[in-house]
Length: 218
Ligand SMILES: C[S@@+](CC[C@H](N)C(=O)[O-])C[C@H]1O[C@@H](n2cnc3c(N)ncnc32)[C@H](O)[C@@H]1O
Image (cartoon, rainbow, N blue to C red):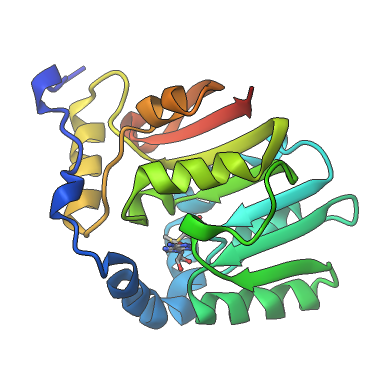
């Protein structure tokens, strides 16, 4: 296998990220929202990657942060769960609200920022976050909020791009491409260790660049 050298694995320099990053990204999501499902249909691997969280959902009280157009939520939706969701983008919120009504599943959906989740500490059994973490300005702030709202022993299920553990050149190129699109590549392993989690890092695709992190709050 073609491998990249360890010294080429560099995370985005967060000090270069503008303070209005979230609002700039939000403008892009405003025009992407309507076409988001079409994108997933053209690129079915995306659906496959994010659905990898489903077998790991546990407990009753579930929060999905940055649910986008709600595709994943419709896939795990069930009356056995009490579902909450939050997304920064109003249009994504509207689309997902309509979808959940159509399938007749109750979900409490809110507009809000991952950096300030409107929930008390230790609330959820499972927190889901897919393909959104690299779109947040601060991995540190986002991780600390995702962990805060989880109950003890609760499970954070996070899917996103990060450098491949096996340093595959193709996986590395996919991560760099993602960064070129404006996302911020974060050292998710270090963040999970810093935030005191027991976790597994499973490669789910993209030549090792798409990871599923299954993390338990100690
Ligand atoms: C690439 S989409 C991912 C959507 C979906 N989770 C998926 O896997 O396809 C990123 C989502 O994150 C949301 N988002 C971006 N910044 C956010 C923030 N600071 N707080 C909450 N949601 C945010 C966007 O509105 C968008 O819906």
